[in-house]
Image 1 (cartoon, chains in turn brown, cyan):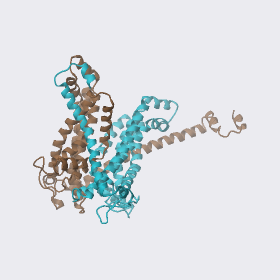
Image 2 (cartoon, one colour):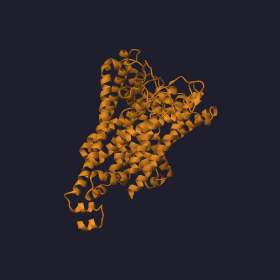
Image 3 (cartoon, one colour):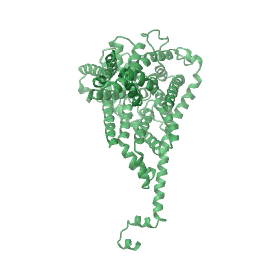
Image 4 (cartoon, chains in turn red, purple):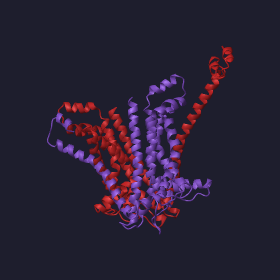
Length: 310
Length: 301
């Protein structure tokens, strides 16, 4: 056999012959394949480890820089020209004020849109257009929403640089996120529940609001919380509509001027004095703590939902 | 809507509820129309004052100095430098993570690691901006002493960190959609995990992966706070990432924060810049959507 191949002058049969005499070259080839396999497993693992290390490094450096400036005074003071006296009272109040408007508004409109799309809409080109449009809205840069808010709410409806103008802008920004999340939650409700309701004589509206919606609610709320936490962290659109960066008063009505946490942080970051960077880091710690709290609530809700469905 | 309703028992108000829900859904169409309408309207006013020719051909962008220069290209270059830099960072990292999680990791590891990556996705961009300016730039300056305080490189890295979880999470979804039978077939023929990944999983999930990268790049193009904080405010036609640059988004912030009078050419210019940005991201988003649609069709076959 070996001789046959050699007389034929075929050099590459090395491979075939090796297959026959298993112990020599085949295993060398296999060793190389195995080596490559574990090498790349290492490469892919490195990618993950690097991502996680970056996260750890980011959080550690912010806590390191900011922990010194954190105190009760920091939470209860207005901003100041002096880094040691600066606080986030006005920014916290502004953030809560605009969440109090944005969250219920975007929840109501978002859930209604999702219900229409999932339960009522006919399968035609217009519904398809609505869905593509929503996917697209979710991809528009947030600063473009800021320009929309500037022309429509601040100038057009003459709301000025008010809490209301900011909250309405943010509502439009997070709507697509809430709609998509609610659609997914509604889609995961078993069809059998709807059939049962129809069989008992329920109308479409009764079925949707008394059977489908309660089952989908935890999923919808989870999506809403995640969307609201995105709104809390957004800076660019509010800068564009002209939220102030230095506010030493609390918002007193829908029409008062305001600032929010990320904008206050931006203001401190862009100051040349180094000590304000540490104050900014302290502000970031508070911002991240609020987001962490919200996200944990979302996760708890999702788990409860899973248990009930399981 | 009607065909469904007519088959069911009707009650008073049923039609009214359906109409109310429909109106909510229409709001999203109204939002799109308003965005396009407002951007176009103000941009056209801008182009009445500044001819489109100057906008496209001039080499500099210097609207806040005399003589004013309106060459959009330098802002587009800045935006592209950051987007390309961020992708160079994020694509290997995100794709590597996705492959490890879907092909190599045990279910348990995945359940621990995935939420951690999701945390990265939930961090506000202002935090990445701070990180870029206060941590990344000083660290880089120890290796590159000529690096300025404001530079495209740090901003690109921070934007890259921001979009990595987007690529890893969407690509992992695409990889997990590969039927297990295909992988098992490859293993049965004696393939290693690596060979299975490159010859079976990646080709199958390719359109999903490409669409995730396109979406991430679109996100990088529209990213505002990181570049505003860390990349500086110097529009430039140079592709050198060590320099200070300005992106489309950062210019919009700069003008909105300044005391530019309402109705002036400078004020209107942000809408011309905005529509340029809108156009870029729209093309990327539609591209991602169409690639994903193709993916759905393929998956059904």
